[in-house]
Length: 119
Image 1 (cartoon, helix red, strand yellow):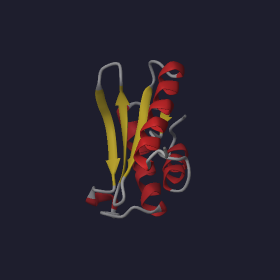
Image 2 (cartoon, one colour):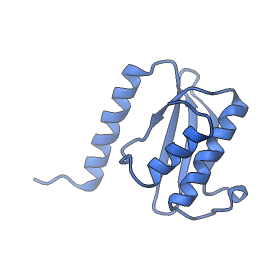
Image 3 (cartoon, rainbow, N blue to C red):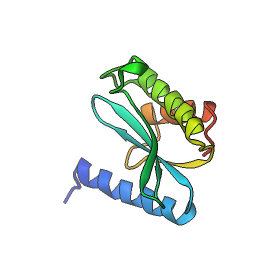
């Protein structure tokens, strides 16, 4: 029986997160979510269970409302790096969830690295 796209996505997400939990305990997590219309990023402190900073294409301040392309992902990555510095976070680990590290996800990660985040 063939697996559906959703089932494969969920398996990939669990595999990625479980590996990251083992290796990166105690560090802040940069979690991303990509939908068909938007892309968002959050800095999450799993120890306290709080979101420290977030950025999304839903924010009008970024100027890419409702867009989901590489340019929008780059702006979100730069914004999350800037907000991470304001929150006092320099070191984190990148949680791509079940999304492949390609295209928009890679553009967001590269922009966040250029902005000063280390992962």
